[in-house]
Image 1 (tube, rainbow, N blue to C red):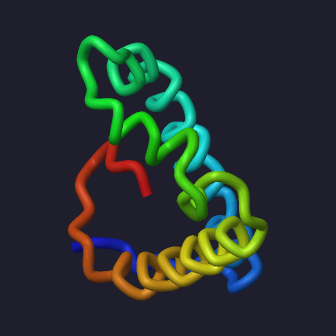
Image 2: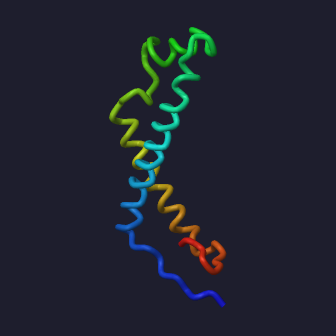
Image 3: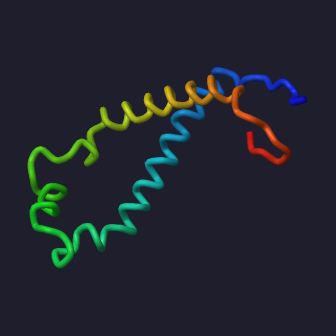
Length: 98
């Protein structure tokens, strides 16, 4: 019989959302750093693809608008509340991270 678990506080959930979003952005940034030699090598990619990321106006929203970051943080908070809502239904087992 599984022990009942208390839900995390709302404050903890609100903090977890942006923390998760920041970790996701860092992982994405590292991924693009690793993939940069492949993505932007003229021998491997077309000039059109390279131009879309570097030269074409308007630049993609991921290239630095503040609103994009705020929206991503709000999405992170929303996802944290969804996980908070779903977590009690997840099965537990010895050694599970929860």
